[in-house]
Image 1 (cartoon, rainbow, N blue to C red):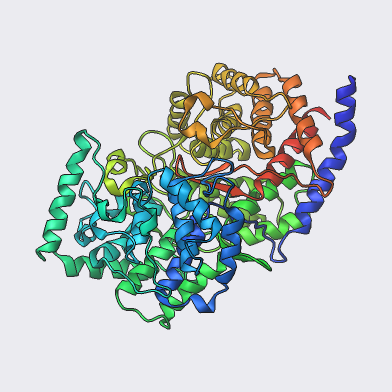
Image 2 (image 1 turned 120 degrees about the horizontal axis):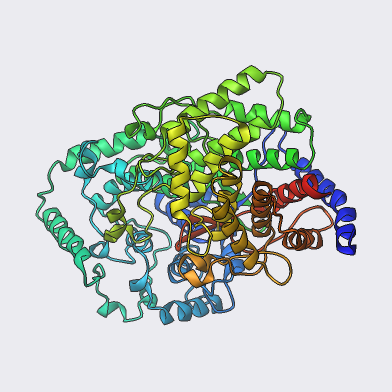
Amino acid sequence: MQTQDRVTASKLPDAIAASQNYLLSIQNPQGYWWAELESNVTITAEVVLLHKIWGTDKSRPLQKVEAYLRSQQREHGGWELFYDDGGELSTSVEAYMALRLLGVPPTDPAMLKARKFILERGGISRTRIFTKLHLALIGCYSWQGIPSLPPWVMLLPENFFFNIYEMSSWARSSTVPLLIVCDRKPVFPIDPAINLHELYAEGIEQAKYELPRSGNWTDIFLTLDFGFKLAENLNLVPFRAEGIKAAEKWILERQEATGDWGGIIPAMLNSLLALRCLDYDAADPIVERGLQAIDNFAIETADTYRVQPCVSPVWDTAWVMRALVDSGFAPDHPAVVRSAEWLLNKQILDYGDWVVKNRQGKPGAWAFEFDNRFYPDVDDTAVVVMALNQVKLPNEKLKHQAMRRAVDWIASMQCKAGGWAAFDLDNDQDWLNLIPYGDLKAMIDPNTADVTARVLEMLGSCHLSIDRYKQQRAITYLLNEQEPEGCWFGRWGVNYIYGTSGVLAALSLVAPQTHRYNIEQGAAWLISCQNSDGGWGETCRSYDDPSLKGKGRSTASQTAWALIGLMAAGRATGNFAKAAIERGIDYLLVTQLPNGTWDEADFTGTGFPSHFYLKYHLYQQYFPLIALGQYQKLFA
């Protein structure tokens, strides 16, 4: 045995045990795992704005937001979209707005630095639509520059070429309430009253409140918007009252008993804004529950207060279960049994929005959050099924029935292209990303390689079956999605390392012989991306610059993904990239902290490619443990 092999073998058991012990130490008594889901500061800034609009700011510790925002400002004066990105304009404007709402004067040194950063990048006039919309709510931008959203959109039938169900679940749950907000175009009085004239690079007197032109056919949407605004000005909007009433009804029907809407802060904020426009009272039970739901997403420390965009207990719990069993826990260990029983109780047996396009499926899926019965998703459901398959429960019959119901639901959600999307079936009208309102390019939820791979991995690892034709269509979809370099795109994780790892894990189980060449290509690409320190990393910028595929400083989570993919490829082909795998394992062993954890600053989760990123605080814990556990089974 070589010296490196001996060192790895000697350190491995202790590293695994330390990681396991840490995860056990943070398990909730109810059985689940849950850690922070971090994003940029705009979520917290918009919550400050919401409470100012409702007049509920004094009943929350919003004074602590100032310390949080100051701690997130970078030396260049701006705030970041993701770690170390050099600062981002819209994010910085919203942070500046929140600080002004909290009483920080524009002459404060931090504000002067921020103002300089913002003006150098074009000021408010160059920000995204949603930033401008939030500013318009308090008179810091004109509604004239916001796209019109006519409320009659609510009345378009489900069989029409466009209706609200052609938008992604997250866009739909955020947009329906904005139909009310954009119809009313409110300017709410707030205390302290502010303006942001100093953030207009061209000067407030020269500001032009208009939608930007592209110089191509998409400018037809600007013509439509002009027509919508003209109809508003002339009070000739058809079915206006009916549309508003339908939107209000839709919002009320989709509020969870816990107060959440859609399980995400944008939908929750926008729904509460819509209710404010409809003159609901802050003491109304619906509003009270909604505000409490936002409070539940907040993290308060002794000095700071911040708000998460979402919470991930189902996702985190399923992955921790897999990590513990992969690394040696018995399938009937009390910790994993308790978590599995918690997951079984979270299975959603109600029909959600998915039924609009999927008339055949029956409920049985899981969502990402504690409560989100209208929007379960394929990715979470597949991971939960794999986690349940790895454990042994007192009631195995109930477990298997739950798994079968979930697999049947997933099978019914296959898109016509052959893959799976996250939340909906055939939600793929890409033209919606071209409308002015859709400048985050996240209006649809098409099938993707990473979610499709998760489904196939579930089928292969759990020895479950769906219609053979459906499975072959999915495999064909994945093969068609492979990039010339051999990698696959990662929609929900950063980025090609994530996508490639998932596809290799899937193909190694369902098509190891027939598609050996594709597997070897993917593995070779991963090896080519390994950093000199033995780890792997990829910057969020790879979504915008293809030359950055697989490039970036090493992180624990992305190193683990690469190792998982390489070990899966080795199992499929019999050719293990032993040297690359050893170096990657050594990277994890060397970077593990004494308490069994790993630390990484980079954002490796994706919300909307190019526009919104996430840092799952448990990614750097359970994925490395999975990699170490799989390595131990294979080699140690």
